[in-house]
Length: 308
Ligand code: TXD
Image (cartoon, rainbow, N blue to C red; front, side, top):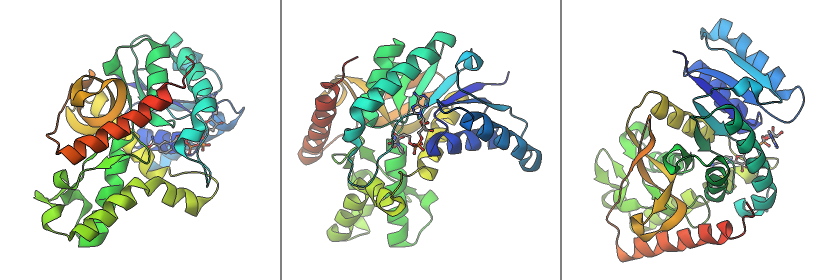
């Protein structure tokens, strides 16, 4: 049976995600956006690329949700993106409205849905989706950690001139300035980077990772990153639809794990057909645990401003 994937938002992240999904033949895709013509035009254009790329998945664009009926999974990317000078948190109010509206509509047509949130501020928007959809917490989670780790892996690769496929990075916490890159758990072919680089270089990589998003916003000036974010979202779709049981960093709803309760925070999880099937707890030093606590507090502060 073919899988059905809804991508909400046909902007930079949504359209690139849709393209990667059909090129990898992960399922038929419905691309939804409020702007009349944009999802239809992009969908048709992508479908036609299948003749050359050699994929057989269907992709259609729509302004409404009827065509999304009985989707297996939804990638939510609709909302405003950051411009220079804006923090992810500045997006909260407007994006809460958009996310609540879209999630209410998509869940009306698909009962057994898994939702991957992408819209910022990520952790708070994932909570909006959980509240509005009323789906179990395992089925609603957010994309951020894979992207933050990809950035860290790229910076380690640039520093050591080794393949990114040999590099594993670990980043915990909320998707914001308080994220917690963990050098002790970041390795090159199994060797912690703390044994390969000076503390100064490790520190520089940690800082650049935490500011990885704004570095790209400042280059682009009119929007934020989308090539690496869409790759990260697609890796999550792949893990769920193929029941891969991959251990990936995701924004997961914590109920006591890491001493955090009732909040979405980025942690390593097993991702499979059941969504977040297991949350993995790493042993943290006092300083790491304190940084994670601070990051969770900033997520809690934002969630306190939600009106849904
Ligand atoms: O790591 C992460 N989670 C992120 C998050 C990485 C990159 C981008 N991140 C966030 O994703 C970003 O801060 C934004 O909140 C979203 C979408 O970013 P994108 O770069 O795709 O923004 P665009 O290009 O502006 O696209 C947004 C689209 C645009 O086409 C709007 O018309 C549409 O969202 N939109 C809507 N679609 C459907 N329904 C409603 N209500 C709606 N409102 C806007």
